[in-house]
Amino acid sequence: MVLVFAEASKGQFKKTALEAVTYGYKTAQVVGGDCVVLTLGEVDDAGQLGKYGASKVFNIANAGFAEFDSQLFAAAIGNAAKELRAKVVVLSHTSMGKALLGRLAVRLNAGSVAGAKTVPSVDGNTLMVTKGVFSGKATAEYAISSEIKVISLASNEIPPEETGTPVDVENLNVDLPAPKVKVLEVNLQSGDTAPLPEAELVVSAGRGMKGPENWGIIEDLAASLGATTACSRPVADTGWRPHHEHVGQTGVAIKPNLYFAIGISGAIQHLAGVNQSKVIVVINKDPEAPFFKAADYGVVGDLFDVVPLLTEAVKKFKAA
Ligand SMILES: Cc1cc2nc3c(=O)[nH]c(=O)nc-3n(C[C@H](O)[C@H](O)[C@H](O)COP(=O)(O)OP(=O)(O)OC[C@H]3O[C@@H](n4cnc5c(N)ncnc54)[C@H](O)[C@@H]3O)c2cc1C
Image (cartoon, rainbow, N blue to C red):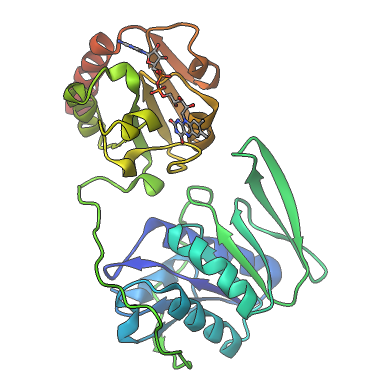
């Protein structure tokens, strides 16, 4: 049986959770048995996860799940996996999943792969799992031969697929340790657009913008597309933009369907976090800018001329 932990934020399932359930369903088809989903704390309409392939959804209720506590969450998922005799445990490769994977692997004496990008294949008792390595420049195949396997799924690799119908949700009781950590405060990023790690459209800008006062044209383009804004590291370091927008090797790694790089040179450390984007559009006045080598589409021109024209064109296209 494959057990999927479906992450929720304020009771709502994220796209990454739907991807994980779809992945769990496909993995169960390969390894045999059902795809069972586990949710923690108060969540809305967990039975809907049946549409993505869950044959059953279990929920563990505990006031401690209101905020993320990696020790408590790992104990709950680990004990549920033991109780339900799961052979494979699937997580999302989000910041929560990254914090849980190692703890769970230790608890379950399991081999683990972080950031898988393909549905595993089976070779006897061994699962073969593929993931991107060296900032996505290469792909590596891992063989997990432990009795229980823990896998986190990289985001935007397996699109959510509706294959079934809603299912029942059952309460599950497992032993939980007393929390050792108390969350005092959580400051959530506000805004209407998707957070960067989940964004499908990203408009990003760099030092070519000359200063923070010019960001209006980037925000206009992003708003016309419904995209999330991002920036290069020096832009965040100098305080032109908030740090949570910084993408790259030392920032957020993203995999949107469309990435606009505006006035960004394309240094290797920047590319490391964005080169998994499906389509990259570069706008730069320097035809020799290294980013053009990674671009699917490039515009050589002054961003202060090009970006407003692009925004206008997007608005006209959408209106039509
Ligand atoms: C250990 C380490 C880790 C790092 N991690 C990261 C990271 O995670 N993310 C990251 O981004 N960087 C990172 N860096 C920094 C990285 O090496 C580059 O310095 C940085 O990405 C450059 O930012 P930029 O492209 O915005 O600026 P620049 O390199 O200054 O490029 C500005 C670009 O704008 C273009 N331009 C200027 N004016 C215009 C105009 N009017 N119209 C059109 N184009 C114009 C220029 O031609 C140029 O290509 C890291 C560096 C180190 C050493």
